[in-house]
Length: 69
Image 1 (spheres, rainbow, N blue to C red):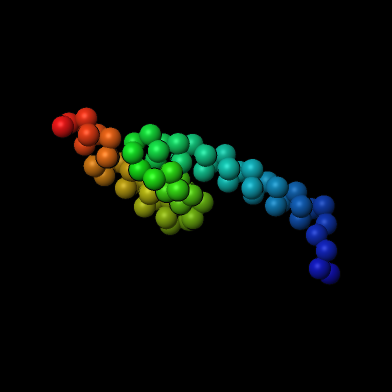
Image 2: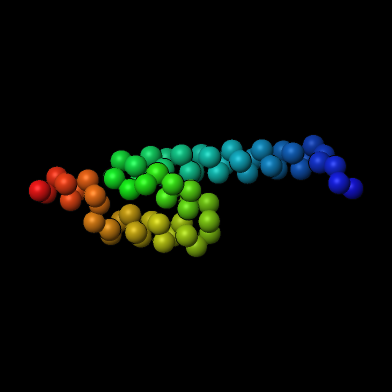
């Protein structure tokens, strides 16, 4: 007990890989619309990812606001 075996290591690597595959594009999308990139980290938080999706979809984007003026 207390040691990390191969199955646990594979699970940890899989979680990190899948999380980075999801977080990286979300962070890029947030950055491209003028929002802080760290909002992309919310995609791995269960309820926060839905809130982020709705926020990005319906918020007044900073870059869009600049383009109007």
